Length: 389
Image (cartoon, rainbow, N blue to C red; front, side, top):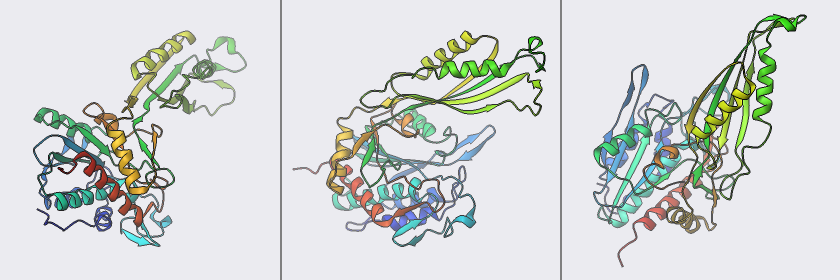
């Protein structure tokens, strides 16, 4: 157990984590680094590998300190996206170098600094309060957030449910801040629906269109129908839902041939006016209106959700204010995160670093902000587990 007064340096721990080239699905020792730090504080650590049946093996970690309720959880991931062309980096992307006050590395912002900051905050909290603080602290760490997200947080949550473990609150350490540390926290996320269209017709000569059935024209009419009017006007917590085509592909090299098939892909980012199932029914109705031989394939990767701005959100906002001197904006924008799975188990809020350089060449984090985030997380823990009067 960590001795009283001994704490973990979040910057050094971040450096140790980014030096593990844990590109999804390879762990490369990243969870070993986290587990060693947590076990040293007395956390009970359980490794939960997943995968198989044609999928790559993914490693996950669940760690818990304490046996009492309430259970406050931190969720994060140690996998990262590939660094791309290393020659474009100013430093080795996995060396963990500090340059002009910034830690430059793949995964520095997304989100190994967040993982290190919470572990360091927990070490400070335990060093100050001891192991009997009137509850439990848990960590959900996955190696499958940047991948398909089928063998990571979902599997840990399934294991917790089967084991009879309950979470009462959760903070996800994704980089939510926009301009300065703590200026934004997320209390929900939009849903995401991916659609693929295949429109089949009859190939023919452009000089004799009466003998053909042009699938391109029907695809264009369908696209126009889908984009004809807004899906909704948004609401107080969510911006309007959007539908964007991401690909239209005919693959026709001939200028005088009507093709037999046309394909398109689109994405809908939707707010809590909709569910994925409702949108799928609407899409099929639009396809039926156009008619003809059209296949529609739909995959919903996450539903819209909102954690009402009370209780947990207010605690996190108060912690940010105490650490940074400003109150954060409560936001639901951006892409999806593993919070979309956790929201089915307990209230969840996302709070983390500035995300301006995530997935970029020379991804970086100011060292001072790693320290600042550690302070925010320590304030959250103190709020969840107040000291006895």
